Every structure is written in C-alpha cells, then in structure tokens.
Amino acid sequence: MSNQTLLEMKHIRKQFPEVLALKDISIAVMAGEVHALLGENGAGKSTLIKVLGGIYSMDGGEIFIEGSKTDIHTVHDAQANGINVIHQELVLVPKMTVAENIFLGREPVRHGTVDRIRMNADAKTLLDSFDLDIDPDINLGELTIAQQQMVEITKALSFNSRILVMDEPTSSLSEKEVNFLFDTIRKLKKRGVGIIYISHRMSELFEISDRVTVMRDGEYIGTVITQEATPERLITMMVGRKLTSYYTRTYSRLSEKILEVKHLSDGKLLNDVSFDLYKGEILGFAGLVGAGRSEVMKCIFGLAPFTEGHIIIEGKQVRIQNASEAMAHGLALVPESRKKEALFPVQSVKFNISIRILSRFIKGIFVNDRREEAITNNYIRQLSIKTPSSEQTIGNLSGGNQQKVVIGRWLATTPKILILDEPTRGVDVGAKAEIYAIMNKLAAQGMAIIMISSELPEVINMSDRVVVMCNGSVTGCLPKEELNQEKIMHLATLHGMPVQS
Picture 1 (spheres, rainbow, N blue to C red):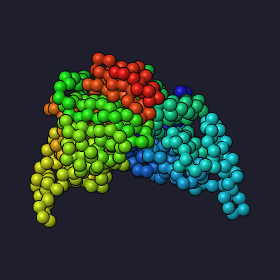
Picture 2 (picture 1 turned 45 degrees about the vertical axis):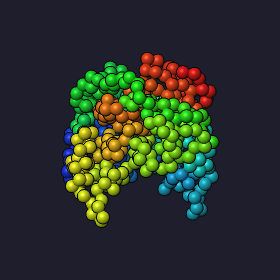
Picture 3 (picture 1 turned 120 degrees about the vertical axis):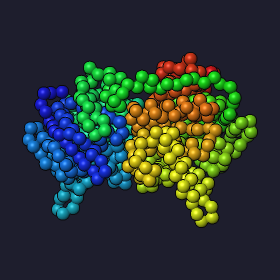
C-alpha cells in the first residue's frame, strides 16, 4: 500500500423518501490498498457503493479521484474515472463468449463489422495477464462461478480501472476458488489498484485487507488498520454493543429419537446415507460443496426422489412425495438460497410469512385478514424482525431480516423438525447472533433441528453432534466433545469412504 490517495469520498449524504440512508460518510482509499467495508445489513454499505458506481446520485458531499473533484452521475461517469463495481450477482451474459462479455458495447470494429480476431486476441492478452487459462471464444456459461468472476474482474480492468469494488465476492466460491481470487487481488495490489472489499466473513477481512471502515445505520463509525484490530473490536463497532455470548448454545442431552434415515441412496450422488435425530437436538451437517448435504434434505422433504432407503419419523416409516406431505409429517425446510428458493421479493412481509398457512385464513371466498395480521405480527415480535410494518415489501428488508421472515414462515406451520440449509449465509454478525438465539430457544422447547453450514466455527459451536459427508456418503458422526476443524475437514475429504464413529 502506497501513500498515494486514489479516492476520497467526503461527507456523503443520501436521502430516500422515508429514510436518510447515508449521514455524512467519509472514506479514503490508497493506491495498492484493499480497504474493507464492514457493517450489518442495512448499515449503508451498498448505498455508498451505488453512489460511487454512479447508480445513485448523492444528495450531499464530494468525491475526489487522485485529488481532483469528480462528478459521478451515471455508471458511465464512474467507469470513465476508472471506477468499476463487481456486484454479488454477476452482470454477465452466459450465452455469449468470454471475449464478447469483456468487450460488450465496446467491440472493436473493422470494415463495419465486429473484428472478432482482434477482440479474442485482446481478451486473451487480458486473461493471460492474470495467468487465467480461459479460452476467450468459449461460452461464458460453460465456466465455473469462480472463472466467471475472474472474467468479471478482467472486464472491469479492461476499462483501465484504478478503483475496483468487490461486493461479497466469495459468497459462492469454494475454499480453493477463494484462494485463487485472493492471489488475483494481491496481483492487483502490486499494480497499484485500490480495492474496496465488502464481506461478512471476518476471517477474509483479516487475511486480505489493509484497513477496515465500519458503518452502522448509515453513519461512519471508524477506520482501523486491520493488523491492529480484533474480531471482537470490529463486532462491537458494527453492532454498537458487545456480543459477549455469540453462540450461546446450551447443549442438549439426547433422549427421544424423532427421525431416522436408513441407507438412503438416489442412484446419482447419494450412497447409503444413514443418521438419526433427537428431540431438542441441533444436528450439524458439514462437508465440502457438492458433498450431498442439501440433496439428502431434499429427499427427506419430498423435493427429490430416492431409489433406496427408509425415512422413519416418530417410529413410523414414511414416504414423502412433496412439500405438503412433508408439512403434514411435521417437517419444515428453510432452503439454501432465500432469494432463489424462498422469497417473494415484491410481496409484503405478511404475505411471505403467511403463504404456507394461508388456508387457515380462508373461509369460502373470504380471507380473515385480522387473524393473518395477528399471526404475522406474532412472528415479527418473536423473531425480532426489523420492519416498519407487516405490509412492508420484503425486498426492502436487510438480508438478516429476510432470513428471519423465511424462518417465521416455516415456524408458522408448527413443525417438529426444522431443517436449516445455510441459515446465516449472507447475513451480518448481529443477525447471525439473533438467528443462533432463535435456534437455541427452539431446541430448548424440544424442536429437533438439522443445520447445514459451510462455516466450521458455526457448525462446531452450534451443534450437539455433527454428521460429515463427502461425495454423497456419510464419512462420520462426531459427538460434541470430539468436534474440531481438523477432524471435520479430515472426514470431509475422505472421498466417500465411510468410517466408523
């Protein structure tokens, strides 16, 4: 990191009709610096980035690029000033080639037509500069998510970007892919590129960033040198209070068995999967991406077929064909991707909570709005969902509050078994603590919980036992006293060779 200031945002203010989203925010980014932006969902990080990227116009403040005051009103203005934003949802076209994506709207022309030879050559030069072995003439959709992300970075740098914003860049990446991304970021640092890095994963910030700026409720809280910070200090800055008991798990004594899965296979990935679950237990599921954890839960819930095996609930063998039958047997499933699989983003909080039990409020052609409202407000209170009212559009809530709405939807079905697939993905530290508290309370009331998580500290601290999977098979089941990251990772990389536990 040099002493040259690339970017200064001074006293930035942004007003929306109902809320002051940014209140006097100032931040500076140096050449060759990774500057992390940290805050709970709703802190204003995305709004600030959209101002910098030309998506929103600011209502007050100034932006300086290398000391010169700069007006940014559009995305084109931002790109012309060397600023590019890589959003969490990649803005690429899968059916176009890599080269076409990189130069979309800026294709080199020769004799009135696109010069594909030059375009592919220029794309190859850019890709080679990052040691990326990617064919520029291949369709983007044939690449992995990590490779697509590298193409997005390459595209951004084709604008001669001096300032690059990365918004949750590792949310869909494996550990190996994250390491590759970090190697690329280090190369960018050496070139003097300033990087604003947004992530909820604290471990990443300590590995890759030079400084961290913390925001809360649209306000600037402070900037710290990463090497001088601690997770506890950053969390306190984020939430405005000390989270002294982050996980607060009171461990359960296993007594009454509620679910047995025996020798489950699906003829594709899953092979002879067996485990059991007890009332009041939080049973963790660990494994690498593609291990088969989500597939097992979809089979149990009736969302995917299986060819062999048995599912036994409270001593009775069942064969569940769909979600309605699963609910009838006391099952609930909060899926891995709330955006793709759970949310109705343009509908209200009330609609999103009550949709699974809507039949309870309908008599003939009439809906009992008062009862629906009462039940919705009950879960808003129980789960501490931050919303102006039950009529608020759920798409306007933070990720953590959206996740609590989805949990509320399934709790409204009064389940005996709650399956949570990556329950804290994409939510901030404060919301994580609230979701953990909800899980603990439900388990204490006797509900049986299955939690799939890719975050090992979460699995270890929140689980009574942990089932580990690799390549569609169970490779071990660890009791609480044997849980540690080394044992879990060993079992998660056994390539489908079951071990005795």
